[in-house]
Every structure is written in C-alpha cells, then in structure tokens.
Amino acid sequence: CSTKVSGTPMEKTKMEFIVFYLDWAGNREELDEILGDWKEAAEKTEGVTFVGHWIPHSSKWHHAVFYKADSYAKVRESWTTIGRQRDYSKLTHGAMELFVKPS
Image (cartoon, rainbow, N blue to C red; front, side, top):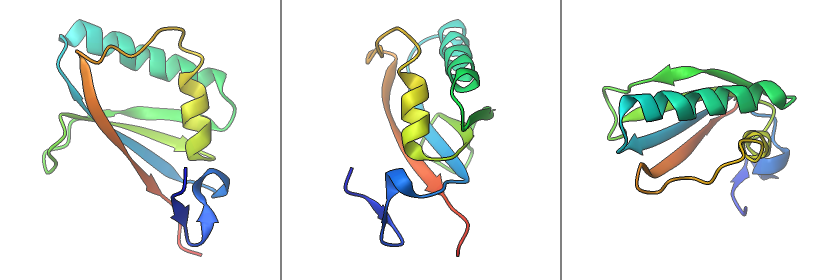
C-alpha cells in the first residue's frame, strides 16, 4: 500500500480507530453472521478490538464497523483467519477510514 500518514507508511503508523464502511445486499441473518466472524477474528488477533457495528445516517454507506487497532495491517490480518471468501453479491463494496491522534 502506498498510502502514507504524516510521511510514515500506513502499515507502520500507530492507529487509533479504523472504520470499515460497507454496503450490504444480503439479509439480516447473513449480515449478523459476517459481523460475528469479524468479531471472532478480531478476538484472535493481538492488537485488534472489534468495537461494534453502527448504521451511519450522514453517509452514503449502509453500515459502519468500528475497530480499535494497532494498525490497518492488523485488521486485514484478522480477516485472514475467517476461513471463507467474501461473497461479492452480498458485500458489494466498502471503504476503510483510518483515524490517528495528531502528534
């Protein structure tokens, strides 16, 4: 990833909060299942806490999932423990927003 935060590669920057915005085209039970998978994956990964799921009212996205994590790479690492592939017909697209405290 070539994105930098204050001149430091994102993978090495100490993150505070990471928000994953997503649009969901599946049913509620399927969404609850994937949210459970993400929560369990975070619990297995040191440096990642699944904070919760919210519905944003001032955003184009359907859902927002909040993490407290040491890095963006740690959240992505946690997802590799899930053991199933993304279903693009249900999780159509998403975006990450990274929050750090100013130095």
